[in-house]
Length: 185
Ligand code: SF4
Image 1 (tube, rainbow, N blue to C red):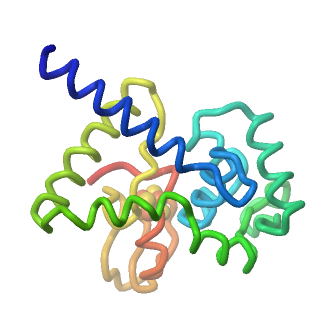
Image 2 (cartoon, rainbow, N blue to C red):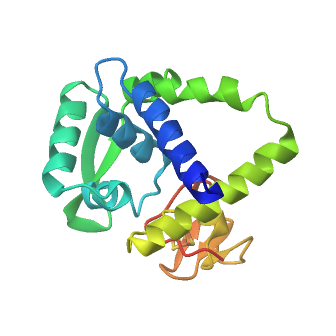
């Protein structure tokens, strides 16, 4: 078996193990991913089309998932302050509470056996692979705001930071969220 074949096999098996962990509390994997997305996405991305881009699924799948999560009281839609025809999707207190029991948290135990250096190296490798995979499939990276080429730290006109693309002030909290417009710096 070549090294590449072995690596691909390992990815496949890890993805399957993660997939098996992704159903709990009566939610399917897409519904869990939607909850995680709306908890981590910034105000420019927290909407149905942002979720569709992030997951690479159909509009129908996104609408159905949001409807189910709204009915369960885990998400709520509010008018988008920047676009009168748009909506922003936010987690409710119940949604945030449920995320504390995210089934993917089981991975924390497994990662705890790695040293800090191993974790850092693994993170860099996986991030690199993910970006390459998304680029080949012409999908957005949705990286962290603080790592974006448009992110200006501690700007005089910011709060305290600034987005040079959208020309809006950014808080420290904004800097830690993911964005559909993110371009790696
Ligand atoms: S700096 Fe980049 S990631 Fe942050 S809001 Fe602007 S475009 Fe999005």
